[in-house]
Image (cartoon, rainbow, N blue to C red):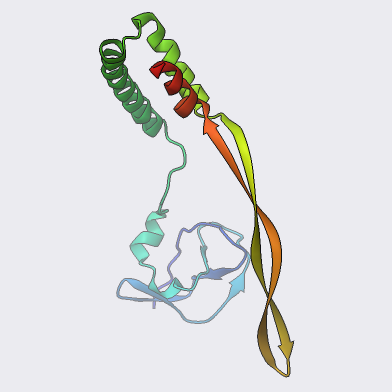
Amino acid sequence: MTKLSTLAYSQGKMFRRFSNCVKNGHYLEPLRPFYCFPKSADRYIYYGSSYRYLQVSRMLKNIRTVILKPFSLLYWGFLLFLLVTVASSAYVYFRDLLIEGVGIPPEFFGAILFLSLVGSFINIPLKTFEVDNPIVVQEQVHKFGVDWVIPQVYMGKMKTLLTINLGGGVVPIFISL
């Protein structure tokens, strides 16, 4: 029987003390349950459902598994490089296509590309359509120990808004004219 002192995180509210543990292979098995709050970081380990199956090497190394790193300069640098590469190739390809195919002067190409990009966030409403539509509402009633679902039908108005996108609809129409 050996006493193991493990280094662990102090996360959560309930901790398990592993000062009296039996080393069984590479697992720790507690001899007696003992719950307390952490007083020293090297004497307590986070109490979870799989505390018996944690490997001693992982506990001693104090390794934290990272699933998603939300912010990294390396990721942003890669995305910036990809944006510059793809945007410059698309700019050259579409510039030649618009200048030769449609006949737009090269001076206006940057402005048209910018208007199309900024205009893609703007929708212009054209017309609203209203239709009477049945709406089914299910009400749950508890009677005699059984849950009953009672459907009720109401007549409601359904509205549909017809819009045109500025960058994807209006700008290409002006280019084609």
